[in-house]
Length: 394
Ligand SMILES: Cc1cc2nc3c(=O)[nH]c(=O)nc-3n(C[C@H](O)[C@H](O)[C@H](O)COP(=O)(O)OP(=O)(O)OC[C@H]3O[C@@H](n4cnc5c(N)ncnc54)[C@H](O)[C@@H]3O)c2cc1C
Image (cartoon, rainbow, N blue to C red; front, side, top):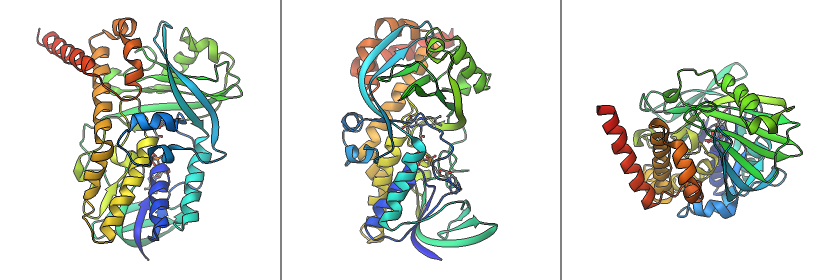
């Protein structure tokens, strides 16, 4: 079997690149290891509203169009995001979001790719990839070799293409998420909770889906805790947090799951442009590190990857042009997001997170949530780093 392009993974990144290529009459085969696309749900299910997407990625082409959820996948629209500390103090910002049913969302994106002409094969894990442009796929107990001119890794954070290439100490957060019903939450507001007692190094969330249903979860980081039993943190958050415990009291968990999230930005360029292969979405590390959100960048790198492949197949440019294209459209925002994550790390490490929250967070929240890192904060960050260095020397 030979295809123009093989795509490994049927998440938002893989579905998007397959659809765009198939629309341009490129022969695409997508292999997905799951039997059913989108299940289990391992996501907070939040997409920035198209009106916010433009501000998040001001240089990205088609950003608003890509982030619009397909029909029948929308659960709720929220107008606000609230940041809450471990004492229950709050600040609020107007940030509009679409909350989706992630399983339906992934399925709808894959259906669009199929309608455009891509061949989709579920229950078909890719078990190896070789440098000559072929992959081995397992289906119903049989292993087949499939060849292609280009191979796309869209297979999530532990991509088969980046294993062994990725920097060894690249950091991942561990995230746990549940869908809960019978909760008493404000359907208009997404809540993000921080504090080392509940979500060391990351945050916990309550994302309302309407009808007293919410996506409730949290992330933790090894650097900030020796105790990696994430379910223990989750139980503590649900039962003991002064604000969350009231909202979630009587709530019932319908489903739960956990997964890793890459939080140091795109992997090194070797990983994203090896020979005839590119990695997009989580497989390339394209997640906004300061919030752990990766659907927008999965969609965008799907689109940018398709552009690079089309030019390559027409003989107009090398496939490595992908690197230049994503840097031009989303590179700055990826950098900003990592800077912001490092800045909040500094606040957590030197214990000044509470004073920042009380004195300055309201002033900066609107910027930080939109991945903007104003000069005054950069200066403050510089000062904090200096202070941390002096502290570690003394
Ligand atoms: C708990 C949690 C909450 C999150 N909440 C949000 C949120 O609210 N908003 C947001 O924007 N982001 C969120 N994220 C991040 C987001 O889910 C990812 O960034 C996004 O799913 C990336 O899309 P993707 O297509 O790159 O990868 P994925 O969605 O991970 O898809 C990869 C696909 O590849 C398949 N696959 C893997 N290996 C193989 C193989 N060898 N062969 C064939 N198929 C394979 C997998 O089964 C999967 O279907 C969250 C992540 C977690 C863990």
